[in-house]
Length: 464
Ligand code: MSP
Image 1: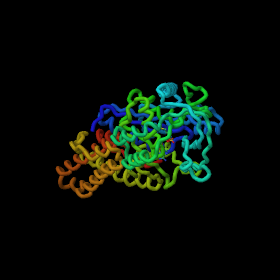
Image 2: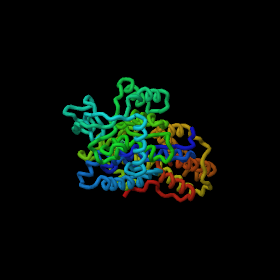
Image 3: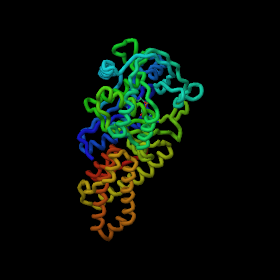
Image 4: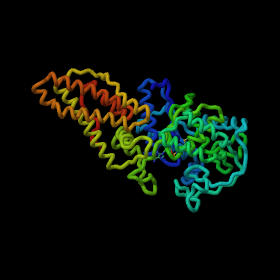
């Protein structure tokens, strides 16, 4: 598979609180993809950013008694710091408060309005601020409680604007069936398809009369645009002409917005659909949802300060298959750090370089002729966990080889064999550095450097 250009997007994060490792998980995944395709020669554009309007952010700012934009500025700085500390190399960071974005959203909506895709009507319903979504009574628990946020939904009654979502039902189903939009993993595709086959879509409320913190409806200044409509459009406004994307990465909680509302908006305005929508799972901490109340929110900046960005990047994608839920626990994290990284890879690398130096092996940095097809297959299909497993099969193989062939004995009785053995292992290590690069860019660069200079230094120095 080859792409001339590869446009990858992530969900844009709400700025009601600072980033945690769940947000980081998705952005690292996108960064792995971006680095992988860059290494394959594609022109990559990686878009991420922040979702800043709506009640959720307005309420968080109000609590601190500051203006929403000032509040957002502070959180955005934290996001940017976190992504830098994790080596997340996006090409654009869009904020939905960027004037360019706001202008784009207004124009987009005006166009739909002019084309008769939007009408005004009365609305009465229950709104969950946490989800920024109107809920059906059937979806709620006793006492109008949102099952995701465990908070009571608010009854909202207003005259607002609706988008004719219902008329796109058939077209969306056809697009999913015909793979005009590929939805992965397969179980998610089936889930959404069955949902569409079962439930008639209702038109979508796309404005709010009582929410001030938002983009104004261009033809009716008394209303603001529904935050989800505003947010989804970042993918075009922030894409610098790259639309349509080859891949949109999102979490399972926001699947329906992306598999139904988003394609309908695109179809209505005459845009191409994204090539692929990939839905990842949720990261828990010690098996529990991260929450301030439980006090188990893990700050990615803290983890990377102690272990370095690469260790977290490795752990998150080695532990669980991408697409399924994953779990973070300090024990597992420490365990993998010691076993897989410091011992299996770090010691191997160090031992081999020390021997190469000691036995004066004349080896020049080189890639092998191996094609690693299974690795590429896994990477191109976002099976990161499999790709990492394959790399560690090579690592284990090399460790075994050293145990069996005993280079220290060879040094005494068969130097020609020793020379061949170490050259072969060095070449394999050069390959491993390349294969690891999307996941562990710093470690990979250190490996390549040391293979060129021949000077061994620990890859995973003991943490401070
Ligand atoms: N602002 C919306 C997205 C708009 S996209 C047009 C939003 N923001 S969010 O901050 O709540 O979540 C951003 C992304 O992070 C989502 O894809 C969400 O699924 C993901 N995650 C949030 N918590 C997560 C975990 N605990 N684990 C994995 N991903 C998580 O939704």
